[in-house]
Amino acid sequence: MATGTEPPDTESHPPSGGVRSATRAAIDAPHLRTDRWWLAPAATAAGLLAFVVYSTWRALANADYYAAPYVSPFYSPCLAENCEPMRGGPNWALFGDWWGLSPAIIILIFPLGFRLTCYYYRKAYYRGFWASPPACAVAEPHKKYTGETRFPLILQNIHRYFFYAAVPVAGILTYDTVLAFRDEDYAWGHMGLGTLVFLVNIVLIWAYTLSCHSCRHIVGGKLKHFSRHPVRYRMWQLVGRLNARHMQLAWASLVSVALADLYVFLIASGVFEDPRFF
Image 1 (cartoon, rainbow, N blue to C red):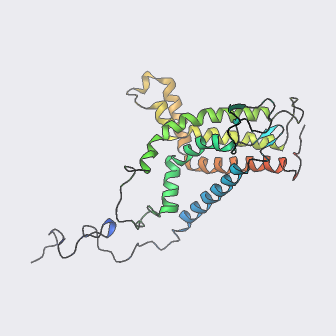
Image 2 (tube, rainbow, N blue to C red):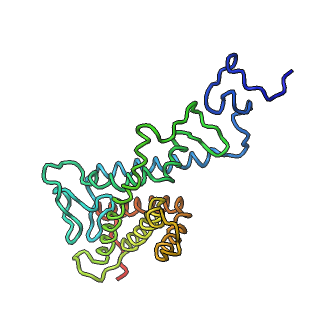
Image 3 (cartoon, rainbow, N blue to C red):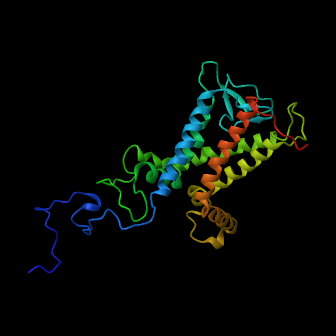
């Protein structure tokens, strides 16, 4: 007599793998959710795809990325000799005249690598593009799960090192924001709509960067007694509060950096002139 506690008959019913294996609950329906659970991953995929398409176009355009005193965050710091002249800006020709491609390709690898390996973005594009899993309580279609233990996903573990690279990039973008207080003749005392765009962008860039999980671990990790490290403890609390908004900051900063580049493009291409406040 069957008692319901016997091990599954794997010989006559071999496990198919994943959530459909013989050792899992036998539920015929793919899931029991009745809401529009697919909207969130679909919107995430659409948003990320839109940024990928836009940033790829702008990075390869190699034009209209400087309109005094603004320089696109996609092209700063400009490290190639073929950069547009940026008076007073971080334009270091470390790559000589042999570099014939867009200078944005040199620098974008660091902030994009930081975002690509970010804990939140991993979840976002794993769900949005790979359906792994597509949503909570919805089984993923893959039979096997190897996590991030194999190539290429094992490279996600270098996220901390991209954080180290993202910090100086954010510092340089801060310098660009300070230079945005100059006018077209590079005299100080200017403030235009572009200045506000750059201010909002750099605040969101820093908030997203400092809310990173790696930053939180660097600030307060490996401490056995917070009472003996009051400064680090307070920093850890601050980063922890930012970390609680990491998803929102990730999206806000992604939109703001694209808008900052778009604004410079519109000014540089002559679509309109930068409105000045003083």
